View 1 (cartoon, one colour):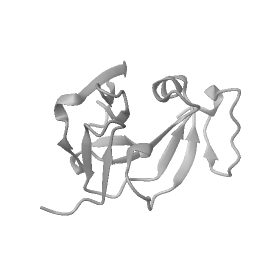
View 2 (tube, one colour; view 1 turned 180 degrees about the horizontal axis):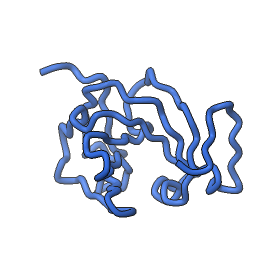
View 3 (tube, one colour; view 1 turned 90 degrees about the horizontal axis):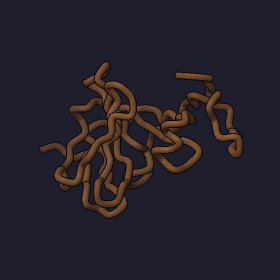
Length: 134
């Protein structure tokens, strides 16, 4: 068995993940759904091959919510931590919530999405690419 690039977990530690590939650049999403799902001004998502995400503990704690047709937000049903998202249109890709990944990351944020829906109490202070929608 190969060594994971990273490990990740939920807040309560019940769900443990092994990421067997380097996550892609971090996309920062300001859409209303991501803000509500995260309870903050945005979500941070790193895309990677779905086959590279392995649940090593707590599969029975995984639950999902279909926030829009074909888009499933997966979370820990014990502590509520958002873990990753899948999209039926891209079944080979998973978007991992960057904040659950343990340790320092090589990847960095690359862009802001849905800035047209951004919380009016938040300000972007970086020079990353910005998109009004996706």
